[in-house]
Amino acid sequence: MDEGVSLLESEVRELVRRRGVDPVRDAASVRSLVAAALADYDDRSLAGLVPPLADPGAAAKEVVDAVAGLGPLQQYLDDPEVEELWINEPGKVFVARAGRPELTTTILDDAQVRELVERMLRVSGRRLDLSAPFVDASLATGERVHVVIPDITRNAWAVNVRKYVTRARRLSDLVVRGSLTSQAASFLDAAVVAGLNVLVSGATQAGKTTMVGALAGAIPAGQRVITCEEVFELNLANRDTVAMQTRQPNMEGMGEVPLRRLVKESLRMRPDRIIIGEVREAEAFDMLVALNAGIPGMCTLHANSAREAVTKLCTLPLLAGENVTASFVVPTVAAAVDLVVHLELDRDGRRTVREVVAVTGRVEDGVVETAELFVRRQGRLVRSGGHPGDDDRFERAGYDLGALLATGDGG
Image (cartoon, rainbow, N blue to C red):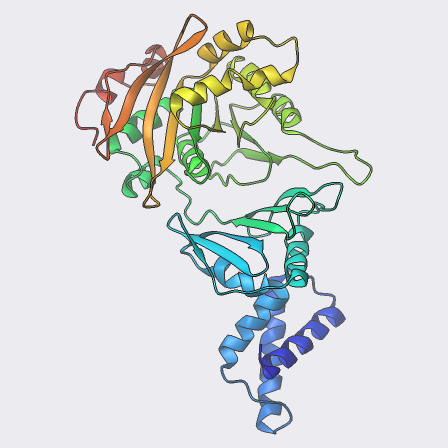
């Protein structure tokens, strides 16, 4: 930062302090103050009182970023091509474009990283210290932040900011992007309208949240949707929606609201649909109870395949307590889950649907039976020979399941 920009920034910070502006929550006021300060600075530079600015427009943006944004990281948040950025150590700042990581030229120091993290957490109110060395939070603009500090990390603070650059509102948006075919999209649209329970699986960054958002676009307009997430990520267009997120314990270790509690509370809120952002632990049991109560829902799960996702969902509820047994969980999964949509991030950074699998409702030797509906072969998602276990819900919703699954090229 050159001398003129540094001077302009200090003047703007003083104006922000005097006028009591919160730069995190009121970026518009900061931009107005910068514009006024820049006009005054230009007048003084013409009189030779302060050093001139080589590029006043660039200087104004740099000051806005420094005061109201994330300073040297703001350029990556503003770049629509950047999907995620992360800091391994102050001298190693990475970004991902089209699924591929690249090392940036941005060099920070320890103090800058800590100051940036403090800004990131200010809106969420979540804390980070030796007793709570991990934190998940959201920026005011919706990006998800995850931070880990020493002595969990070796020396430096590790920071991840996930942007969710493209959000599909409907499955047709994913067809345009090549993630799935029109036939698979039509089937999934019908499945959501018919009230089938959908599990979306895949690896990290495979596009699970985007897929859930697109599936939710098929929920009928008159239905009430309750979402439960660790940190707000879903941004649904549905008119009647209540979004809830977990809460960390306070300094005294009190006040925590875990995901299990949110799922239980959602059942008291007259839901027509429940969406759980991600199932990792014992909340899988509460989700199964909710789905088995006749409330359609969706959730995401980390897994390497649709088959492994079903197997994992048969295991996670056992974490809820010793009284929860596989003899209860396995048939409950078979009865409660209808479809698994498995996603992948390929070596070229493309996010695609790898397979759509139906859970038939049958259990054989303690294993939940599945049937492949759509699979990816030679780079194309094509119709397979499987069939859902129950046609009635499609018929009641006014769909011809045979026509939806008619064997063709999947396109």
